[in-house]
Image (cartoon, rainbow, N blue to C red; front, side):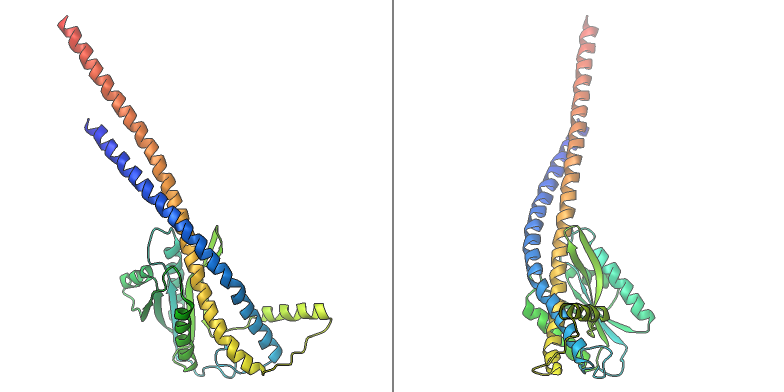
Length: 302
């Protein structure tokens, strides 16, 4: 009897867990749909800003700007300090999301420290903060953007990064986050936010496509000057790149939580079927035992 009662309690507990995980899966699905729409809405603008910066930089030649790496107008002498912003979630139960981002961040920290560089760690998300505290690592600043990052808040953070970089207080800014590729693929990566680099291959592709379309290299006449354009485009590129990274992180978090909760629901369903089968077997064995005792008692009275 005790075994049957114990199995029944477990069946009730498993059904309760299954209802909870099913509800969390539905919530994560709704949040994923909304976050995906926001990320898709900002991605074309982000990509076009980057392409425009590449085109103007390639056509303008050697234009000085303190936000560009390897330019004569750079921040100057290296100070041996870099900022790493680690973007994690505020809540758990999202599969390997936080673990993948944090492993990637720790690998980046070890690599930078091996190069004799001081890494200033900043976090966005409670899970990252708890992890670094457990590792007994100092956190310079913590940020909270929630499930719906606001561009004004992200722009303020990007302005601070750019001000410190231009002032020569730091050498670079990197962002460790989960890049969203598709619903079935999310890639943890470390993006270099500052200094901005114009990829040579991007410039080459732009020049080749322009030449192929018009038959000759395009000569740009800038009004206003290329330097003025870059002074306006480069800060925007930094802000939208950081904003896109945060949006990708939210999408990745919700899709991975959705998958994890679906797996938990399926596992609870399978465990419930197993417990029900064990319950029926235990009850049948108890009934058989009782019948055997009754028959044995009746036979003893004859």
